[in-house]
Length: 134
Image (cartoon, rainbow, N blue to C red; front, side):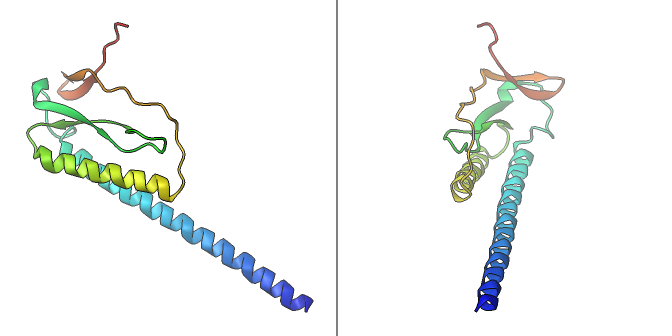
């Protein structure tokens, strides 16, 4: 009887460790999917491929989802792209990130990123403008 008990305990431990590894692998897969989605959004934004000569050609939007609520940050994008398609992809990504946070019981800080005051062009790149005259 002791041998059977030992064998059952050993099998439970093995099963739990395998199950945990599988869970970690699935979480990593989810992280990779989110990263792929984010990189696609960055590419679509043209922030790294289009020269900034007029700040009026650029805008920004909130992206991502903190576990505590609210966006993770803001992303700059060119107004010359299909903005409806771009913003739809940003929403899909943000919703997926919120789902990831719930699924994996992710925690985060509850600070809220402050929206930038606008966009400027510096050395041909779009950058966030912040009012620092407080």
